[in-house]
Length: 450
Ligand code: GLN
Image (cartoon, rainbow, N blue to C red; front, top):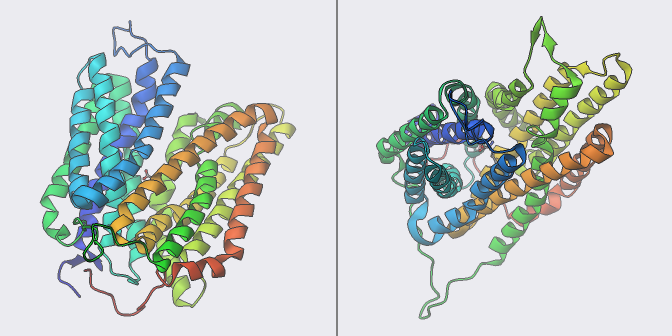
């Protein structure tokens, strides 16, 4: 085993873990206070905001959260074509630090300029750091999926703690201190990344495109590479359905919790927004056990391909909506028209079981299947697709205003179950298109990182 490992994984994994943890800390911290800052009264002497109305604030919020994921595509291209992933992450981190620094300054021009820097920074960093995780492992290495789960836990430690810390500082003391704290988080991430470079020597370097001998033309994709791209694009369809369901959390499920869930627990009224941290909390809690479960499952010779996990994850996410439908039925029976909070806890838990079967698995899958020269672009495309899923979630939430929640909850379940089942039914056929890229080659021998 290579000496540069810790707890069975290349040390580079932990560098990427902490870098991304801080990047997500800054991202989710900033996200937690953005809409609140925009709508806080501008004439307030204590901690004034921009005084926008709700609709304008939500519009900007929507554009912002969409643009960070859209910019993952040029961010991926930048890595594939010009800089390689490692330098693109460095550039993205730098842009993020500058963006947060500018946001900490109290002026409108600074606000917009800061947001633009952050959008560009996330675009350059997020897809490329994810690809680098895969680059630490050779083809067929059984540790790759587990590594992505570990990385994903890092993401969620950042996502869980940021709204609490940045949220408190920004909302209670001063918005710009909040933005500043998010910036300090990002700066820490950048420091970890810079000092960790010695563990990342062989990963994320620029791969020049091969040219056909004697011409200026690029070598085209082989049949195998094309098949792999096809199967990735098919999996993206399921990914959209999954995020479309899962991201009800911030919208419809949030409003539902506020209006129709009895949030009294042991004499304390749980604010609806507290439930928003449950996703990240459950990921941290069950991420490890689930990764072990899948290793154990595979070692018993059971079906454990990425596509199978994604299909199963989509169905499990759907069953979360069966619980929500249960809550909707309960509201019809109770005198105050409210349902018990445990329905929400159960639904969020099932959504996270689904998330852990899909989100880190999809990241890993992309690094296994993409031709090396396109991996960053495909990762960027994946994040774009998750952004579309978020948009779909918004549309579904809007539809609930007309159709009623019960109908929407049942429909979301039906959609998830259908797409998940289709993926599972065709898993054998689709696996053929991967041409073995998703297979674990050597179960016992731990393969050295390249
Ligand atoms: N919650 C994850 C993250 O912040 C997944 C985001 C996504 O894929 N859209 O990285």
